[in-house]
Length: 218
Image (tube, rainbow, N blue to C red; front, top):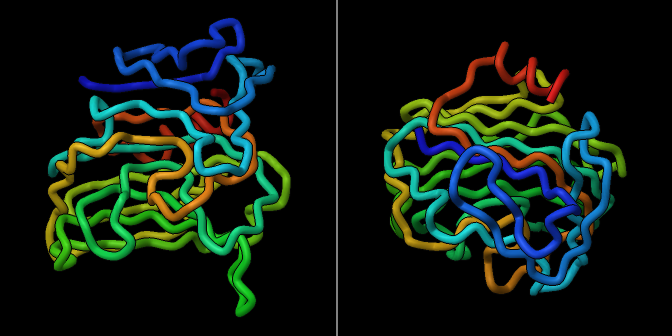
């Protein structure tokens, strides 16, 4: 199992220690604080600049066609039109990536909405995108999000509950050799102001009961 969990403990200010794996992260222009959710570890604060992020390198996010779950806590009031939360996307359109983004400010509606995407190549092979049923998630409160990939299916859970699901034509093979980052991935973006805690990446498609348990107790 190639699983990872980072709780951003302020007692280790020079490195984001991977509690259950070996992919320690590199802090880039951030602040650390405590306590984290349920008093575990701490939180990382991104500062709304292009160089504010946590970089986990390429040991994370090269999912291939395997099942996976990515989850974290976030608290933001960011109003950027679009911004990266976590992932390894460097393509402005189709490409090879996993991406979790938020629409911070949409004049037409649906502001504060999360979107998870997987894609295989520049032609959109096996592309899948799912948007959260919930909006207004940039309300300055703590929220939990989990993205689960099972075969071609992509499912979002928000605050412990099922939110939305979709499926591509096939299972996107994600092998791009791009660094997995909390914060800006696309070079034209700016990292969002906000607080992030307890990031986990798991090589399994966690079920709804597992995710609800993590939301309640971890």
